Image 1 (tube, rainbow, N blue to C red):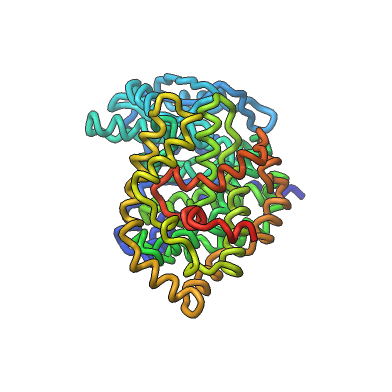
Image 2 (image 1 turned 135 degrees about the vertical axis):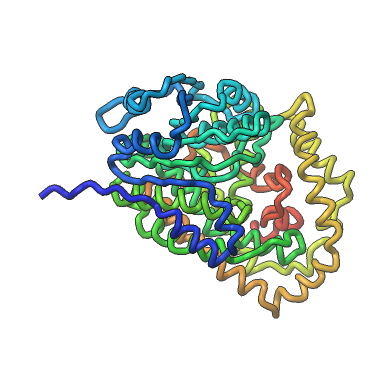
Length: 465
């Protein structure tokens, strides 16, 4: 007997209800996605979706890259283009390089092709989707008109498809820029299962950040470096995280149930983070390590490893470091001079370390612009640091961190079960020992968000213990 193919619509009304319960009505009302389709027959549903959610459009701007894309045994892009053309819309296609590095210039060029009768359809993975999301914001800022955006994910690799932020390269450094989540997301399971398996495994790696990043956010809050801390997003994503761990093997094999579980988790996480207007619950030190590796590769003109694969390895590093910190560290004994460097010392460290990767100085200027805000706030937290140290051995900070951070063996085993990289050497391209150590020691310099990496830069002894 043949099992019937299922199509599910992630109920945005239900999501709004759950978000409202945790984040309040403002968070729920910020969810701008109108329709999410996840199933085997998204191609058949594309035409009625266009008719229902883009009825005022007269032309479709379809953006994809130049890599071959499959949907089972078929070629994907002509099928999507044909389905859109069958609605009567004029079709304009934009083909980007498969080696696309998402930046503002590319977003501007896409925005320049739009008009107030356009439907924007992105067919691609996370970088391409982020560029299109930001292009729509550019067009909105210029014209005051919000064109509908449909998103057709081609790999289960990131949660960018449903997020209200776009990660773009600014002066050679990855930065979060404002965008709008798509109006319609079409998660076509045959398309997702046809992507290279490494991309699906990278999606699991990206979501493993949930095992450690909440700890970073709480740590920043405990040290006076973040005023917005909440456990709400952590609770909203708890079931999704456990589902991913339980289905890791199926995810790695691109089995139907694993592909569906991952697609749902990625989609819901992007929505929840956008509703909270906060990426910290899924983006801590592990993401900063990935951004550091990207910065070095971009500067050298080398290919980038998959973002989620790097994040997965970074999550293992972070989980191990938390275990060492919680078991062995004595923050009260740390060198206050190293804890609170002068502005000149911090700027000199950035200049010296990144000079080989930045002959012109543009990257270093961007890095200091972002890092300086963190330095200013951190140097005002001396009293908070003393209170933190007093609490460390007898208070609740360590206990709360233990509750928020998964054991390293759990993170590593989930990734191993999926066949995902569990070490820097297993990344593609591989990261050697020198570069991986540099990332662990210096990644905190690339971003203003305070993470465990910032604390260990003050005294890395727990890592050596």
